[in-house]
Length: 363
Image (cartoon, rainbow, N blue to C red):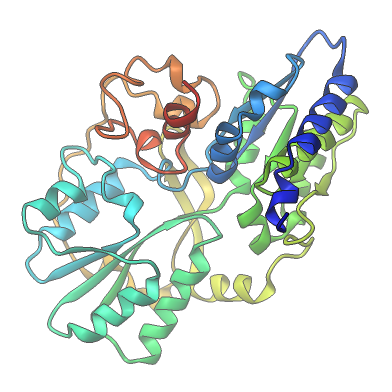
């Protein structure tokens, strides 16, 4: 048995399920716990964890997929930039098939646009260094997990004296939408399975205000089946005892304080702003834009471009799914007009999307 096998042990997982069932037995109203990380969503579907839980416990998915919460307007600007003859777009692969208002980066690449998939923002910096006659734009999408690496690429480009490297930033921060969801009278959440990767950067104490202001229990949980099930058990114990505090199940990675060096890089290169979230709207202070001191690297400021009129996809319920108000199967497009091969909404595109997970494992 290797190290990971112990976190996927069938007997351990089933034992945790029995302990959870014993805890909540006889409860009339189900406890509702929300995961706000796309990797958790995928793990819950992949290992069939919902089916192991008693009816007194319900898991719902929240806005934890970075690609899914990126609004159409951002995609439209990226597509417009890709149509400029001297621009190279660099991006992680998940963004290619996300539909904008009328097109996608995949479609534009098929038409001849220079759009390249990279595995690190530093790869984009290297492309800029190798193509001085071109303007290279990296699509900066993601939460606090990926934002430090993008900030690092800007620092690297500055150190190399590059004037042709830019970032189209659409980074989001996680605690703010959790506060919005906690205050939503139409959504009763009894506890959060907090995102592990994000928490490794910002630290578990970043969620403390959710416990004090909204009385919602929080547990930072790992991604393996035993991690998630143990996190659910910890949340259930808090909820049943009427407590609300931040606990760390994923202590092998996450600390109370987080990664101070990554936080420092974020604070230097980015500054908070009121960011638009797909399906949720503009949330005060929930985004990271490039700070004025590094504005020369901001693609939105440095490269003027005409962006097409914004259009939303009729019938797509990505927004309600991201808020946990409906399940993928409730969307009239799910599995019909919207599939991984032909996605309508971002929730079906991303490998961390709720609809993609439900399509792959939940049917």
